[in-house]
Length: 284
Image 1 (tube, rainbow, N blue to C red):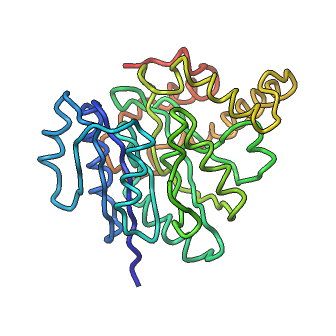
Image 2 (tube, rainbow, N blue to C red; image 1 turned 135 degrees about the horizontal axis):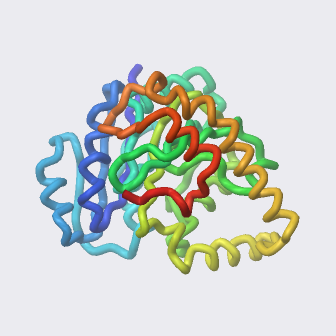
């Protein structure tokens, strides 16, 4: 039996990347997908992009209360037995991403969350880093999320409405993972699933992000300024990046691209992987 997969996309004024988002879903090898796009009333041409999209894309463009509200609207409209969350500036990297996730759920019926590896790309789809995702362990999660949000697929039977907490504007994904950790197992697949876009308008670079994250941690009895915790988190992130170096070197042989990607040269990819901090990465 083919299970329906629902891809939820909140969107607002990101027409530049919405094209890749839609194409990456349309190019998937898995046959049973519904793509639900909730646009917040964009004025940058996003509606024109959606109008020209595949008829299978379900979309609505109207004012909303922000990203979390748009996600909850998309979740309420979805019918899938598996849920993916793909922001409008995100895209699936490999044509087999959804097929691989569905196969993992079938092989592990007790698992409620499946995730994979990712790529860091810039505004022009130039690959900057391979984002290796380690096997899941709750203790590692204390120091940060070592997988990217668009690489995650969820069994909605482990969720309850609302999908995300609308009181959160920046770390609604982090809160979702925390809630799911109490309900189900996480399973990693060895597939490069999705991309994380390095661009100046991303929420993690906004002033409100660190404050919301700090308030969230304090509410759970965690000191956000603990020097030991911050040092361990930094060490873990460096270690994860270095573990991914061989995969970065061999990247062109590992994917069937769902969109056009500029993978650059092997020496450049290895340099970005091992030496460059994210803030020094080229945006264009």
